[in-house]
Amino acid sequence: MNVLVTGGSGYIGSHTCIQLLSAGHTPIVVDNLCNSNSLVLNRIEQVAGTRPLFLKGDIRDRAFLDSIFATHDIDSVIHFAGLKAVGESVALPLKYYDNNVSGTLNLVSAMDRAEVKSLIFSSSATVYGDPASVPIREDFPTSATNPYGRSKLMVEECLRDFQQANPDWSITLLRYFNPVGAHESGLLGEDPQGTPNNLLPFVAQVAVGRREKLGVFGNDYNTPDGTGVRDYIHVVDLADGHLAALDKMTHQPGTHIFNLGTGQGNSVLEMVHAFEAAAKRSIPYEIKPRRAGDIAECYADPAYAEAQLGWKAIRDLQTMVEDTWRWQSKNPHGYC
Image 1 (cartoon, rainbow, N blue to C red):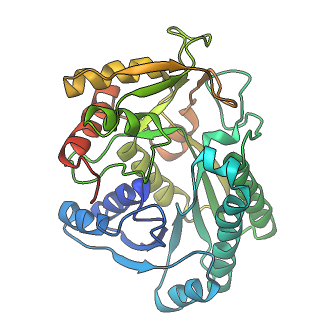
Image 2 (cartoon, rainbow, N blue to C red):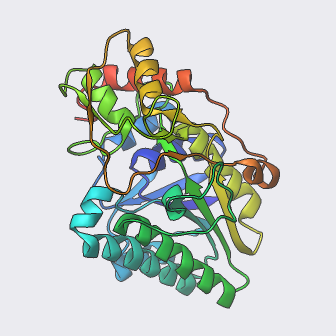
C-alpha cells in the first residue's frame, strides 16, 4: 500500500516507516520538521535500504495537502503529526488546538476530497484521564486533564462523528501508553528538542552527561515504591501495532479503538534502576513534589488489540532500556 505518514520523521513515525518498508509498503512522509530532524531520513535509508519520499509541509496547509493527494495514489493515512508536550499545552493551549485539532480536520477534509477513506490516528492514553481502576480497557470513560489530552480527545470525537456520517470510512484510533526504546541498530531513537518531557530520554541524557540529574516527581503515591507507575511500550512494538491496524482495518469500515500497551506497569525508580544496569553507571536523581495532574498508575489491558489485530507487545523492559542506551551512547547529541 501507498501510505501517507504525517509526522513521519518524528520518533514514532520514523520507526513506523522502517516497519512499513520492511513489510513491503511505500511510506510517503509529510512533516514540517517543527519537532524532528530531516537527517532521520538518512537513518531510515541506512536501516531499510530505501529512502522514503519526503515532502516538507504543514497539515494545516490545504493547498499542500490537495497537491499530495492529486499527485500520489494514496491508499491509507497514518496520522502522527501533532504537538505532544503537556506543559507547553498548558502555557500555549491555542497552539495545540490549532495544530492538533484544526490540522487533523484539514487532513481529513483533504482525504475526503481525494476519496481516501482509511485513517489511523495517533491518540493517547491521556484520553482516559485519571482512571478509576487499572488495567484500562477501551470501553473506560474518557476525560482529559490538560489541553494536550483534550486536543487528542477532541480529535477522537470529531473522527467518530465524521465516520458515523460517512459509514464507508475506516478510522482507527490507537491509544498509546508510554513509548520508549529505539531501533536495535542504534541509528534511530528519541531526540527531543529542548528539555525532554518523558522519563526515559531524560534518564538517557543524564547517563550520557548532558544533564546533571533526574527529577522524580513524587514518591508518596500508593505504589510499591511510592513513585508513579506507567505502561512502557517499545517503540518498535508500537510501530508494529500500526502495521497490524493497517493490514486488518483498512478495508473494515467503522471506528476502531485499540489500546497499545504491554499490560504491565513499571515505576519511575524501576525504570531508573533498569537503565543503570544497562548503562553500567549510576543515575543521580532527586525527589521533587508531585506535579499537578499526575496520577499514581496507568497501564493498559491490551487483550482487545491482540484479539482483533493479532498484535501484542513482545519486547521486555531490559530490551527497552538497552536499546535506548545504545541509541543515546552512539548519538549523545541526537541527530546533530
